Length: 461
Image 1: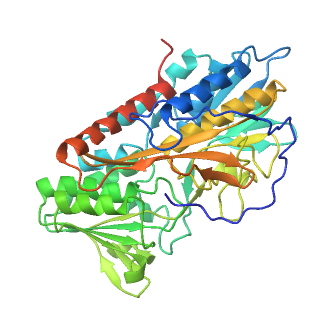
Image 2 (image 1 turned 180 degrees about the vertical axis):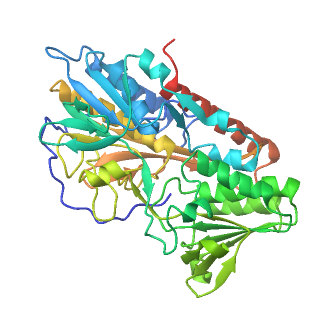
C-alpha cells in the first residue's frame, strides 16, 4: 500500500483535553472482515484485546449530556455516529449530511461494468436515526471554532462540545490544466458515486465497437489506490461482451501500484490484449487535457484522443475541512494518531479520506476503522478518562469480474510518529490461484460490503 510521505508539521494539542498514552484501545474495523486477517496480530488476539478494552466504555456520561456533532455521513461519519451512541448513550450525537441518501464509492465500479445497479449502493440514514442519532440534512457554511458551533446554510447554529469532521474528498479542479467542472461533464471522473457514475456508464454504452477508452491516474495520494485498475477491469468486462474490438489505455503518473502483479495477471487471463498500462517512466503521466477534442497530453508532449476519457484528477480533503483551517498546504488534514484530533485546531477530530493517514491507504475500510478509534477517543475525552491506544485495520477487495476477486489486508498502530504498519500482519491474494479461489474472494468482497454497510446504516435488532 502506498505511504503518504507528506511532510508533517510539529504536533500541537497532543496532551490537551485529557490525552494520555498510558492505556491502549485496540478496537478497530477488523471485526467485520469477511475472512481471517493473517500475520502476527491475528483475529483471536485482536478480538481479545478489544474485549479487554470494553470495561473502560461502560457507564460513561455523568452530569450534563455532552454533545458531539459529526459533519459527513460516509464510511467514517456514519460509523462514528453508530458507535458513539452504542458505547455511551448519554452523548447527544448529531450527524450532518448534505443528502438523505448516501451512494457508496465502493462497488460503484461494478455499476460501470454492468454487474451491479445503482440501487445496490444506495443507503439511507433511518437505521442511525433509530439508534438515537439526530440527523440534520443540509449544507454546512462554516465552523465557529471560538463558540464551538456549526453554521448551516439554512441559518441553524448547531453547538458542540467535540466536533468530528469526515467530509471525504473534493477534486482539485486546477490541479490538471484543462480539467474543471465543465470538463468533467465531457471527461467524467466518476470518483464520487452518483451522476458521474451514470455519465461514464452511458458513454461506454454509446461508444462504437473498436473505440478507445482512456483512464488517467494521478500520483498518490487519492481515494482508494487500487480503484483505477479495478475500474479498467470492470470496463473490460463490459466491452469484452458488447464491444470486443475496443481497447483500454491506462495513463499513469506512477511507476507502480498496489496489487500490480495480481491486476496484470487478471487482465491477461480475463481480457487478453484489451488493457494497456503505461507507467510514468514510459510517458504515462498526463499533464493536460483538451475536453473539446476528448484528448489528453502526456508529459512527453504526445496527444492522444479517446472515444471515452475517464480523468481521475488530483484530490484534496473535502471543502469544509480546507475552509476551516484543518488542512495543510497540500490540502490534507494532519491528525494525532492516538485520538484523531486535528493537529491544527483543538477540539475537532477527523477520520476518513480527508486525513493524512500515514501508512494507511484512503479506503472505506480504513475510514471505518479510524472512525471507531475516533469514537472511542471521544467517549474517553468527554468522560475524563484515559485515551486508549488504537489498532487500525484495512482490507481492500477488488473485483475484476463478477466471479474474480483479489485482496490485500493490513493492520496498523498509532505511534508518536503517526500511524505505522504492523510488521508481518495482513496479506495479499496469491498469484496463480485457481478459479475457485478467485470466485471465493469475489464472494468475500460482497460479504465485506454487506456487513460494512449494515454496520453503518442498519437498524438496531
